[in-house]
Image (cartoon, rainbow, N blue to C red):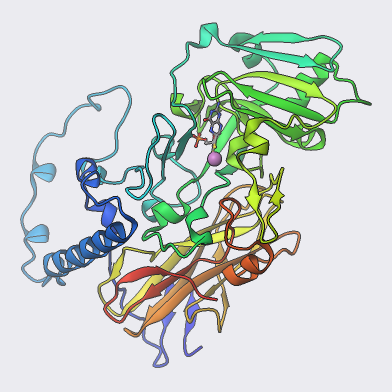
Length: 458
Ligand SMILES: Nc1nc2c(c(=O)[nH]1)N[C@H]1C(S)=C(S)[C@@H](COP(=O)(O)O)O[C@H]1N2
Ligand SMILES: [Mo]
């Protein structure tokens, strides 16, 4: 490499620092929520509209933000009202809201996916988020049968099955028990599922946005199972059941249940949001999202897997030989560059802080490598702290765009030594008819025009 990186400053061959380039935001950042419905729902139409919007956005930003002549810049010379006048007293609402200028950063339903009644999903806007914590209002949502705001005074959690003392807790009882707080990611098993085929979903919000990471507070499942006196010899599994109409029920192996699963009532310092399972949800670290049962009302201890509909019909992967993989729970090591990413446009040559997220359902992220040439050469990115087990890890790396075409990729390695695969390596084993557990390396192509798009590199 003909350059060196010191902190965030990239020094070129001549020892000068590269001027920072600018990025226009992904197309959905320009859309008003009402407009998204107007985007064509056909796959090709969606892609086309997204690219058209991206191009339009680039043109607009390029003219609006041409480098200001600092000399005579009225933003410096003229004292604005907010410097001269009285500010408002404390915020109007007791619960604060983001700046009005940030209101287009929203979780969104994919215009390319059809909502079937209340079976719905909204994606987190990863391209506009920082660090590793997902703000509660931007946490992705996935509901099989809609969401509810359940009265906590009426909510109960039952522990039954192979236990000496079946128990029923109300929320007050639960919240008096020894509590733990832990940082964990949740990823829907279907995240990045469209990429199994040849569908190029245009933005990182829709390729990877069924992913979030919060500090959860609650009671370890082992605490509850001990209180109920579970039968240590015969009990091998638990079944978690939700209180919504989807009859969502998932088997979790006892060793995992006892290891780090928890029954959580809080996320990021406040009670769970209704759409994320208020007042109680399962937190199953490293395991696919579907097992994080929301509105959790019952845990049954058993001696064999339960084979529920969400385990034998759904959440199975069709293999090339026609058989299905079942009980695939762990989210393997994965990463994605969140900026620059699909739908954004690089407006100038120069320095970019390339940033992204890495995670593993098996422990900590050990290393993230980034390539700017489609995987021929790799450089090691900086990992930001904290690096926690089964949590998101933020990575950053400096890059100078020379104005030519480039392909950006990230490849994560976890503490078990597992290396995130390329899409063709994954397809060689799993075929292309799966929906779930696609943890392949994501490629973003930067065109000479600066437009960034989703491509698959074999
Ligand atoms: N009771 C219940 N729990 C549920 C679901 C549901 O529909 N009902 N959806 C599951 C799925 S498929 C996922 S990916 C996660 C999504 O959690 P979130 O909506 O908090 O992001 O919740 C899981 N738990
Ligand atoms: Mo899911």
